[in-house]
Image (cartoon, rainbow, N blue to C red; front, side):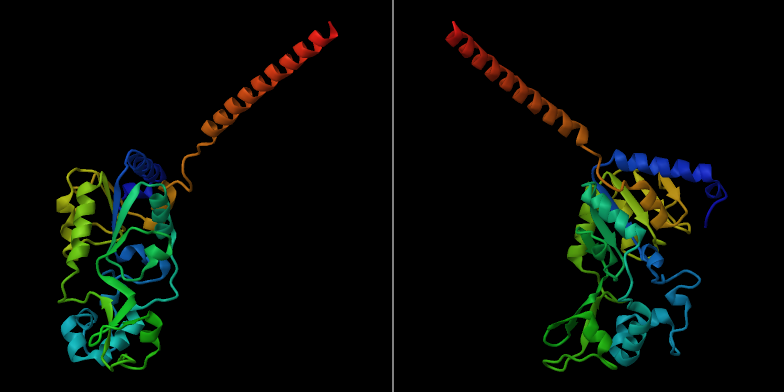
Length: 295
């Protein structure tokens, strides 16, 4: 929850200035984000009061049970009905947080984004180095022949989407409960955190494992948490900001790289001076030749 201190504009600005300074002094930043990063794009999170897990699933089953592998195997028709209604938002657009992180990457400070989201909004916002721990709704495959399918194929099918080549069930490449994460992605995430000099965590309650344990691989105390609610790692963080992650990141990440105009001007001036000197020498030589002919 937001603290009393966070309500004072002066205290908020002080925290923003501190985060700006930390970003300025860092060269290898990693961002670890969760569902809260995408809520400002109109995608609900999972565990807040109005989150997906606190909404009616439309069935006699709890929403949290519907997104499990065992439920998918036993009731694929209900799973896909829920999946299309609650987990797919193809019209969602990147928000200020996604765009700010993309800017930070272009400025060669942000080295990796580790996301628990499946909406692909980081990539849409311009980020390149993104590790999708839980997969993406935009990738789907036939469980029998492994043929790949686009999201619109799954959305436009009625009932259970079937492969148009072999008739097998087309499963979204998202990690369900009871399924293991991709080991390569987990290893890449841990490797990035071990190398970073600043870890920013945002939009996550840090209740989902193994992502919640990644901080244990951090080799320093340069940890920032930006989240509207508290987390179990708040006491470990060097800086905590209970605020909109989009507003915070947009405020602290420069809109463009530091200008090099001054250096360029200096080089141009130096080159111009050299040209002027050469021209002057040439004119002087011509003048001497003219004087000699006159004599």
